[in-house]
Image (cartoon, rainbow, N blue to C red; front, side):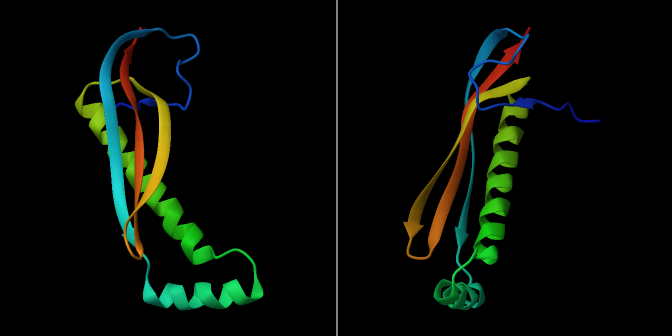
Amino acid sequence: MEKEIIITTTETVPQREVAEILGVVFGNTVRAKHVGKDILAGLKNIVGGEIEEYTEMLRDARMEALNRMIKEAKKLGADAVVNVRFTTSQTMAGAAELLAYGTAVRLR
């Protein structure tokens, strides 16, 4: 069974001490809008309400970026990733990058 690591948005892990900082780890994914989903989103924009197609796409993108970040942390032998953050940026018309990053650490 693969070792689980702690992921937190805080700078510390309660009842644990950082023994070693291994470095910043990243995970990213670039997603493009889907023409069919754009049509549905346009219709929902007229009547209002949540655009579930985009909510699902962004949720999936966050999880993929987070899992890629965790994979990088495990390669370094980390026990945890602290100070985890997410950011997005438009890479081209209709496509955006979602980036997860944090500091990989070993704990005592």
